Image 1 (tube, rainbow, N blue to C red):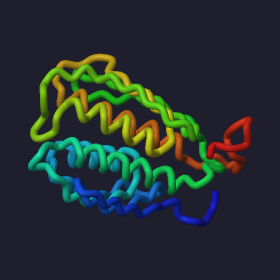
Image 2: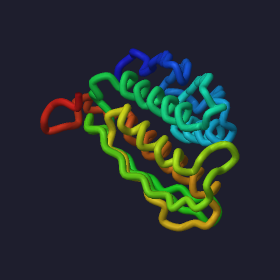
Image 3: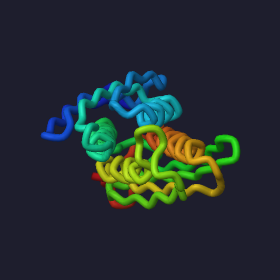
Image 4: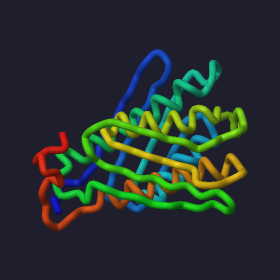
Length: 198
């Protein structure tokens, strides 16, 4: 384990969003999040808490148009921060998997800090939106996070009826899987037969 903190700061400024983010991987799950989209704030808070990442995120976005730009850009900023905080990914477990239930909903997430961006997310959400968050953007957020983090991510909803429960279970499962994957492995090597995950 290195003594250097695994953390990153991101500022992402476009014509659509202005984002400031600070992430610490080896945290306690502390979070201060303001995206302007209440249910998205909730999902990101759940994510930070269960991953045990300390996360500060502020976004000023064009939510008067819709939620898409803010959701996508926050996910990209968070994924980029994870990638930067991991550095060359030496000494991490690399793989993680988790199940998370929320009442009748059950989600599974599997993560590989492979350096290869890929995501397959299937949540079977039925409502057009939850609060001010379009349901189509919930899956998109997880995919955008994985691509920016250069991570392989599979998230599946195994069962569920309530869309709020489905979405929250998916974010919890993803957080728990990432918490496993970023954990320090005492061998201290890059966990790849190639010798590189960059």
